[in-house]
Length: 214
Image 1: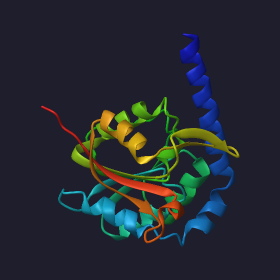
Image 2: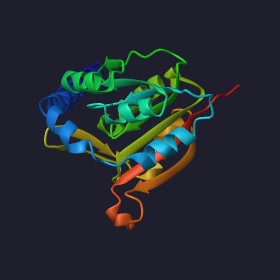
Image 3: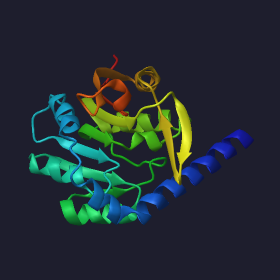
Image 4: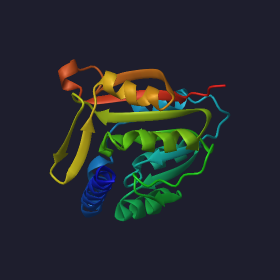
């Protein structure tokens, strides 16, 4: 019981600090990330989806809504999920999309709903102890053969605080282990930014399909 209580207390602290950081910096993040080119990620995500368009999509950790706007302009039906109420409000205003304000550690998502989930720079905020639970929620919310895209800052499977933000930094094999244990099948992976030496590519991007077993 004491171990469970410690895990719960730890998750509350991580959640509160992460959300507080993004609440406090929502405007500056919106202004500072508008020109970030994530077209490589969006293209990898969308080409893996084999459903009939328009796709039903979830932008997990949508922030101020930059990628929601892109996905919507491409003709898809996109919903955002964001822990920070202030970032969610900016996303709602700028994208006109539905935004779910939810703590990543306490998700309430509909089952078998999304053709794809786009998790760009969001899943690394989840500690390893809670990651299987979160991935399970995402798996359940995807339609059969649905696609999960993730892009995370890579590392050597360490967890640490960066200021008032918590992060888990996985290498490829570590991330594969979590994803395959959560019943996802790997489609592709790559490092970003493209065209640079490996040591100058701090981001690990990967594309996964929901596995269905008889």
